[in-house]
Length: 228
Image (cartoon, rainbow, N blue to C red):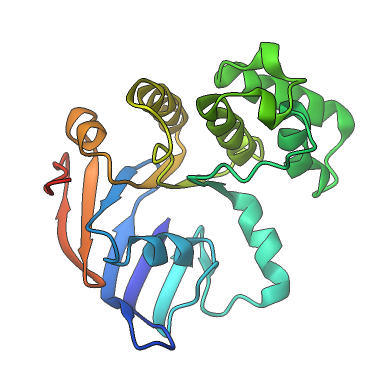
């Protein structure tokens, strides 16, 4: 499903963000990626959807070798991946419904399929009654739920979440986790970078800890393992 082999990533400023990474994530797993700030978590996450390219090594996602993927093929590859960001990245002039529908419109999906899929995911994230609201009319938690709905409307096999609860209060964070758990229970692989010790320790999944660009711990049903 997701495999990294001998991955190195060195930035022009000399920072080694990935230093010999080897990891395999199976279809249907839920994986937390943890570690101190500057450890290489974001690079690890971004390489999975080709936002960053490794300096050396091979990354395979859904059978696609990202090292050999041509730039013009990246948008097609990303249709198989749902990405959830800490800062939501919603289009401010579009309603919740339109933000989600946009992900299907760009791939020229049929209107009747768009309508059904968008309403289905809005129901999943509990926002069916707020479909016509703009992002500014929604709370931070509601905006993140729209972001998650947008990420899964293409029925991706993998959802990559980069600090999805980072800007949210604790109660809202738990609500977001319930949605991610539900998505995972339906067979979607979830890879989530997080600093949220309480969530990692309470909702047990595989934990990959990164420090200095290296995987220092990879535990099934692991703990967070760091002081915040």
